[in-house]
Length: 98
Image (cartoon, helix red, strand yellow):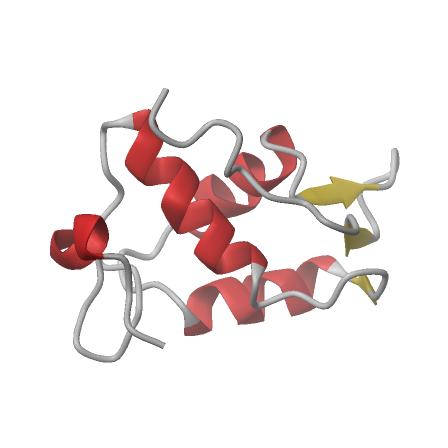
């Protein structure tokens, strides 16, 4: 799948995020792209989340990405922080461009 042309400067030749944009609209597009790497309804532990994030970015900050995925409600986290899951139909497309 060809990445969104707006994200060209933020994604390397392997399709990994190489830097985090300052503009929210581009952040939302990247978060949607990352969200596609998770299976809806499947439960993940922190190590599994970090492994998926580390396989899909090169700037070495999985905590930033995990926090943003949770803040934007693409991923949910249990109160004790031991499990994570992707919500059905979770997307930032409503926010893109705002």
